Image 1 (tube, one colour):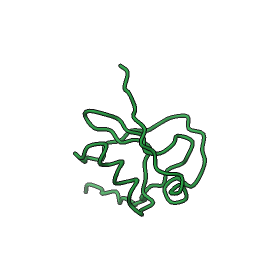
Image 2 (image 1 turned 45 degrees about the horizontal axis):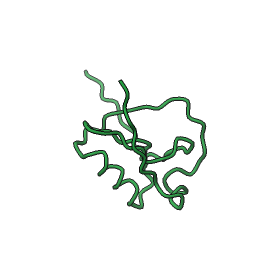
Image 3 (image 1 turned 45 degrees about the vertical axis):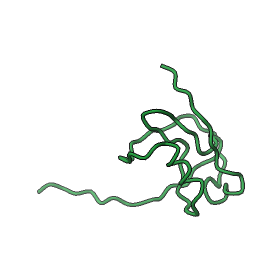
Length: 87
């Protein structure tokens, strides 16, 4: 199966905020955010806000859109999740 990826990259003037460090990617990780918004909306929101949270790709049931260059390391909102133990 071939999946076409459309690029809609963040502007270079936001690199310091969204993807401040260079990198050499070997793999990509895709995870489900449980959000039903279209990929184009996710990328648009990421590109146009002032939060450092960012990601390389957004995926929906119709398309894949790249938001950051693969040679830039993304920033992520880091939340620590407490593990819940069953008694």
